[in-house]
View 1 (tube, helix red, strand yellow):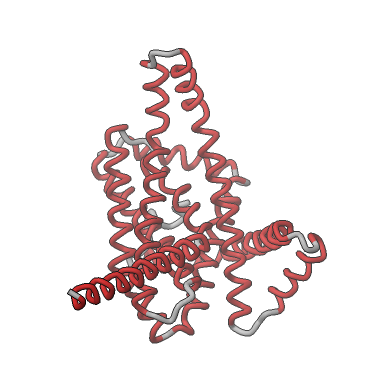
View 2 (cartoon, helix red, strand yellow):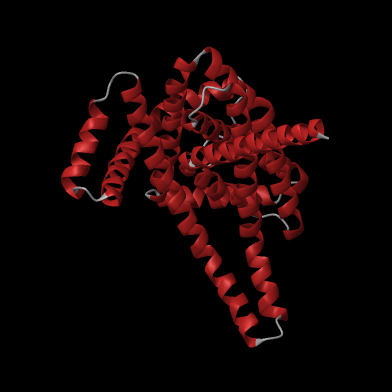
Length: 324
């Protein structure tokens, strides 16, 4: 009997350790996922464009195709690659983070440039009208491929940022935390995307079939409000890209021994906001975002005139380019 009680005590102790480990993994994953907020917001803001123009019945299947590929990329390709990097080439993480940060700066600046160039929207509308007459199945396949390519780049950035934010030397712990980040962020992003793309249909149904006046009025508000909401979401995603991209570049330079820009930004933030924590963060975010925008503008001609033609020549270009 005493042996059984001792065994039960051991089992209880192991269970407590396991529970604490799970809590640690989830806690670390939450902190790491929060660091990748800019890329996550961008992912959620970008994906709805890939279902634009399709029949309502195809919207959720398209989102599901992209989400399924996203979780495969994160868990099967990017997670093992991240663990191998952290074990055998940790010195590569800052440069890779900076590369991803530069990509975010480029994408954010490209969006701003498009907003400043009205003719660009006219060209896009003409192309969209032309493509809408093509075979819908082929068009859907091309759109999904483009979305998956864009998602892969954003997923790589999310996983790399999360990896850099984890505070542990245990490779299994890192793997578990990254897996939690991958699943949670994919569910969050594509759950939000599904809700966004179906919101207007829900609003239309409520406005047309609601039994109560309040329900019909709410449906009308949803239908009228979705275009504005999507514009706000795009604006927030762009600002987040520039802020996160700029901050990654500045922090990466500090990690590689060039800490001057980071110290300069911190000094300005403290001189403007004093000891106010939120104020200091806000000033740093604005400066990082401005720096990200400037870097992005500098990268636009390099990417469009040099990198994109090379990618197209080797068969890696296509709809993912300028996907935003």
